[in-house]
Length: 60
Ligand SMILES: [Zn+2]
Image (tube, rainbow, N blue to C red; front, side):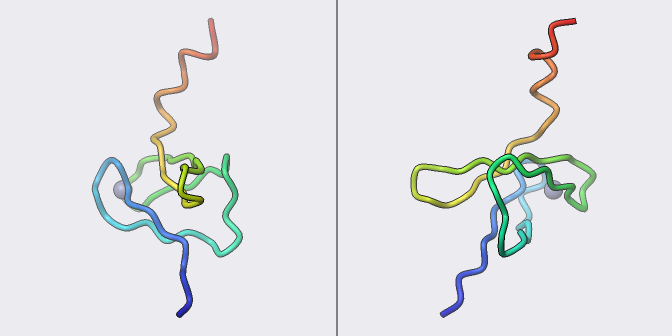
């Protein structure tokens, strides 16, 4: 059985289709309008995090 990488959108809760060769750190724009970052989880899967939370790193 082919295991397509997929994850749930943390904003709208819908499934997000990921490319076969998705890599941690990749940026994915979901159809609900949110920008998500691909993050690897402990189980060798991937989870999605909204990118809007990182502005605190910019330190401006
Ligand atoms: Zn979404």
